[in-house]
Image (cartoon, rainbow, N blue to C red; front, side, top):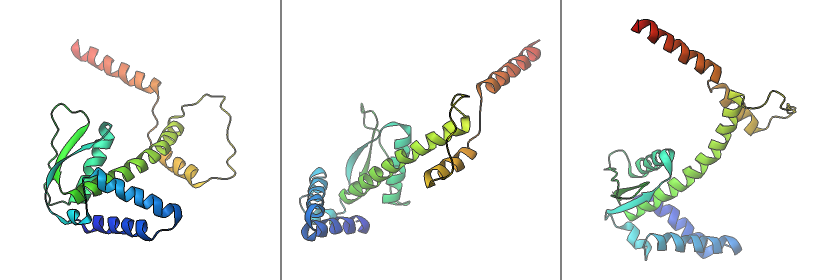
Length: 184
C-alpha cells in the first residue's frame, strides 16, 4: 500500500471532520466522491494489496505519455506496469493495480495534466514569438515591466529553432535538384 495515498486521504478525512465552513464542506464532498468513485466503503479497504484490472482514460499522444509516467511514479520502477489496450476502446489503457494505487495515479494524472495545459499555453506564446508569426505592422508592446511569464516566454523562445516556409521550399528544391543530377 502506498503510504502517500493513505496520508493524503487521512488528511482529507481530518479536514472533512475538523475543517471550518466551506473548507470542511468541500473536503467532505471530495472525500465522499473519491471513495464512491473508487468503490471503497471504508479506509480499511485501501489497506488491501489486492490487484485488480483498472482502465484509465486519456486524450491524445501527450496525455498517454503523461499517464504512463504517472503510473511509473506511483507504482515504482520494479513493479509490473504492463499496460493493456482494451479491445474496442479508444484512448484507454488498463493495468493491474491496487485501489490505493488507482487513486494515486488518478490524482497525479489530473494534477499534472492541468499543469501541462497551463504550460502548453506558455509554450504556444513562446513558439509564436520565436517563429515571428505576426504581421509586419503589428504594434510593438511596451516592455518597461517584464513579469515572470514574459521572462519565461522570452527564454523559451530563444530555445526554439526559427524556421520559415521560404527556407523549407529552398531546401526541398535543392534536394530535388540533387535527385535529378544523380538520376541522370
